[in-house]
Amino acid sequence: MPEDPDVVSRRLARESLDRDDATGWFEDLYAAAADGEAVVPWDRGTAHQLLVDWINESQPEGTGKTAVVVGAGTGWDAELVADRGYDTTAFDISPSAIETAHRNHPGSRAHYRVADLLNPPADWHQAFDLVVEIYTVQALPRPLQPTAIHHVTSLVAPGGTLLVIAAAAPDAAAAPSDAPTSDADPQSGEPQGPPWPLTRATIQSFTTPDLHLIQLDRAPSPTTPSILRWRAEYLRD
View (cartoon, rainbow, N blue to C red):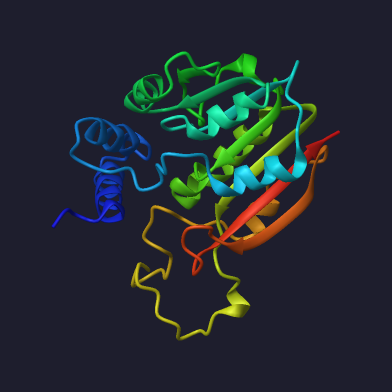
C-alpha cells in the first residue's frame, strides 16, 4: 500500500529540520513527486476552493493590476488569478515545483519563478495589488511564522488586497484540556507539523498600522469538513 502523503511530507520535513533547514523539504517533496515517488498532499490539481469562492464573491477585476501568489507550488491558484486579468507573479522556493508548474501550464500568462519568502526580492516591496497566501506560513515552524508573515504583508501595494487561507488552530477555550492530540509533541503539546495551523492571534498578526483585516471567516474545509480553515481578507490604505 502506498505511504500516506501526509506521512511522507512530515517525514521529509522532520529530516530537513534535523539538518537545521526549515525549507529544504519542499524541494525534496516536489522533486520526489516529479519522479513519481511521492504525492504532494496539498496539490489538488485545481485552484483552492476557498480562493475560487472568494473570486466568485468579490469578482475582482485584474486588468492593469499586479498579483503575486506566495508558495505557488505547481501553479493552480496562480492560473486562476491570472485568468482574472492580473499580471501575475507566482513563486516557490522549490525549483522542482516551478518546473512542474511550467509543464502543467504551457503558455501560461503567469510568471513563475524560484524565490524564498523568507528573503524576497527587494523590488517586490509593496509591489502587488493582490497578494494570495495559501498554506505557506502554516508549513513553517512557529518560530519562523512571524518573519514569514512580515514578508507576506510587505508585498501588498498601497490600496492592495491580501487574501490568506490557512488551517485554523482550535481556540484553546473550545478544546477540553484533556482532549487527545494525535500529532502533539508529548512535552510541549505543540502539534508536530507540518502543518502548524494558525491561531486566531496569528491570523490577526498579518495586520499592520496601514493593513487592515476587513473580513475573517473560519469555516469547514471544502474537502475535509472536520478541519477548519481561515479565510482572511486585508486591505492596505
